[in-house]
Image (tube, rainbow, N blue to C red; front, side, top):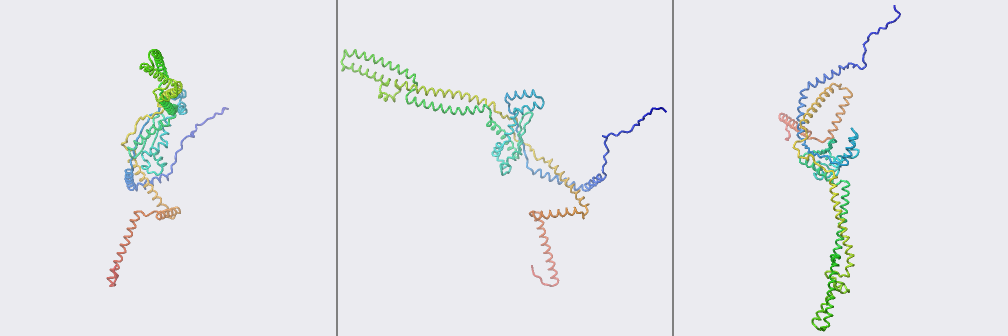
Length: 470
């Protein structure tokens, strides 16, 4: 025997800790399922009748339900400004994955579509549609809050996050009204977007519009003052009038000097009583009068010349100052008005570019196919539901019959059921069937009373006993 000890390891079967253990099924549960199946099989005719009756009743209810139609309008996503688009593109290029996708939302670039959805779901739009289509009468609501909720329930507004397309779906019993309401949503969105736009171009346009009104009023006032001054003083063009009057005065002055020189020569030849001398003196007097009239020599001549065709030379410098001031004010107002008008037109064009435009991709059309109710599905569901309820009632009745009548729980349940039924009979009004049953019971009672009275009369006749006639 050697001194070394050999260790022999015998192979033992190892059982994995994750090995699945066989599931033990309870034979009692299997027997219960078989018993229930047998009970239902025995009542298969009842279940078949329940299936048929449930299908008929569900089909009748489905056909009595009102039809509903859906009208859909699709809107293109609003256009973004160039700066926002460039910023979004840069952020999308820098941030990959979810960060790049959220860049637009964080910066407000993709907010126009969400704003459109909020506008469509606003109380202002809802109230205008309620008033336009008289939805309180159609929905049979007494308060405006309930009408808004019904309109919200009949309206579905969805924005596609990928494409940005807005879908407006309106459900109504009248297909024409459904299409009209969908189009009304689009029209109200376009109106409110134009009305509530807060862009810089719109603010500039509003400012220029108010400024134009003020400048136009000032221009009209300056023009009115200028025209009144010109009409009162016959001042059409003071510089031109002054030049013309000075030239006319110089001509008259020359003619007067020539006439006076000629008169001095004639005095040496003719006396003052001579006809030619008198004519020359008259001509000299007329030239002096005209020259005095042009120059405005004295106050009397100026008063006479107030209704003339032109002012005097002496008044021209004073009129010229006022004329120049009024003319300058008028020209300034005209220039300002022209510049503001140009800026106003440019602001209107810029505002039209910046306002998000509502572009219709698919206009709402009148639907021709109903969307609800699904009559075949409702009929099938109703038939299956009534069949299941009948099967449950059969099993419950079988189980209830197997319970011992002396069981305390069964006695308590029967007492509670009888109490509930009695209370319902006392509180509930008499139905038509109860009235019919009462009428039938009264008829039977009267008939039994008549038959009993007739039998007693026959017996009294046989016995010879007189009886009172009815």
